[in-house]
Length: 338
Image (cartoon, rainbow, N blue to C red; front, side, top):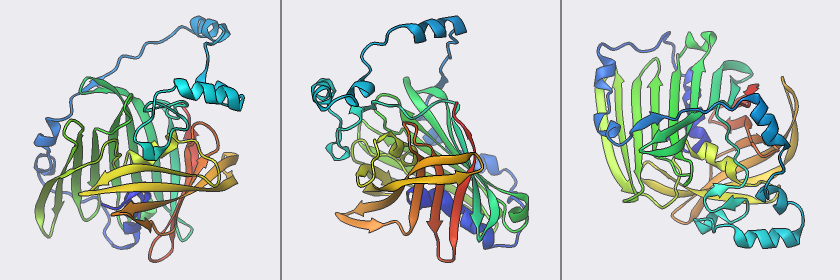
């Protein structure tokens, strides 16, 4: 697996490497790709959504609010200092304290129903689309959790060369902001693949399962376990978790990521504010460049850049990732905020 943004975008580089025409079809593939051992670790239950009548919503809005931590923090340095004393300490320390009350962000950027659609282009040719979604809350192993999904699909033009219909999902604990799992389903011209990972926070262990089917090699499997560090994200949840941090040009955010037997620290250097011209009009954004630390050595992730909306939501509206030949660009098509 690749890291962070490249883990999501690299599948689209495959669009130009083959000349097949449709998703691989294998008899009994669903049965072969089942992950029974993984399924034992994740117990899902839908959370019932309570609908509030519009009149009650209006009344609630009209009521004087109790102290809003985020608003108070922005008023004066004196009030900010006093309020900071009352906030729970954020861990791990490497993530800093600004913008958190314990593990919870003061400004929650995630809204169920949120969906950002990006167009994936290569040499100015549209290859397909990628959706980044925040789905309704679910209960995972008895705890309220976020449900994140990233999906990528090739369009009809590129499907004539290489078809892609891939989905990745993860559940993030609402209170602890730590992931339970990662689930990736790959349906492409040359392969069918299922990937699962599970983080056991009682033991600080990560387990990885993978099953892949190709016409040449048939079914291939691998599984391994490794020690993970407290509060680490997986490579999928990292693409969402980076949005919980306050961002100002010149600052650097950082957090732990565990993937493929590796433990690392991802840093995001906030470069500048930039106004993007999009099909939805001009959008004020924050531009960020990530890098990775492994074994105490920082390694740039090539030329990869993220643009996020310059507000509390920090929606990802553009990604650029240079590969060996050219650059894959994910540019904004549509935003559904809730």
